[in-house]
Image 1 (cartoon, one colour):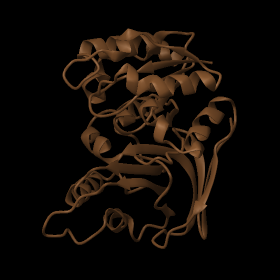
Image 2 (tube, rainbow, N blue to C red; image 1 turned 90 degrees about the vertical axis):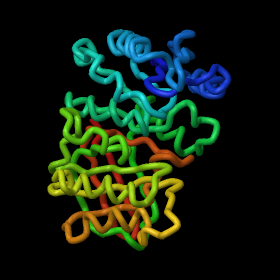
Image 3 (cartoon, rainbow, N blue to C red; image 1 turned 135 degrees about the vertical axis):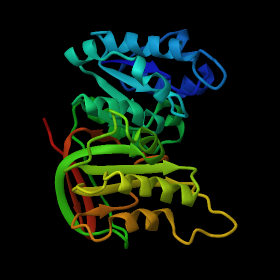
Length: 289
């Protein structure tokens, strides 16, 4: 399997990528990248034209099986409308990443394509074995199935539907656009990092007002990492803020799922049907094709 590396947002250095490059190769995969991966333009990995051009090249290549976004940051939304997916749709490949890569996931979901919400090379040195195994074993043909401990604020129930979503902040930035994921009759996944609690409330309230939570079948909440509060407390945790927005809905809700801005960042298949069961244990099983 051939894996290409792209940096759709923040720049990276060769030193930052050395561990991941060795890890991918030692896992039995062929890597495709060149010095353009390390372009630098202010905080970005090259200006918008440069980043879009490189991504387009790999989207179009028939010999590439997966495209790994090496890190997030900010920048994918600046180039998403420059990309053409016509050739990609003739031979789809896995697009892998999380955080800012939610933009690419959303675009692919709008096109009816699956993608992998998973750890990125910038994180490999700190990831758990379970996190890395979930990605690379899946790429080698294994199925994805999880069982985790439940939390006291979970809402019990079962749902079977397509999984969509990603980073709350990025989804919020896509509201009103043609690539915001269709959440009707779906299981929604959410995670975020480094936000003030009132920001979480504002973004979740915006999703509510836009009707994006009206018809979801289930909710999976991953890492809500490094949340901040003001001197005058907001009065609710990030989990409590999200729970408030979905209370009263007859559906399963899971918190603390191991995915997002955490070291134990397990792979999720966005755009694929999954079965979520929340009880004394939480199970999430993806349909095998």
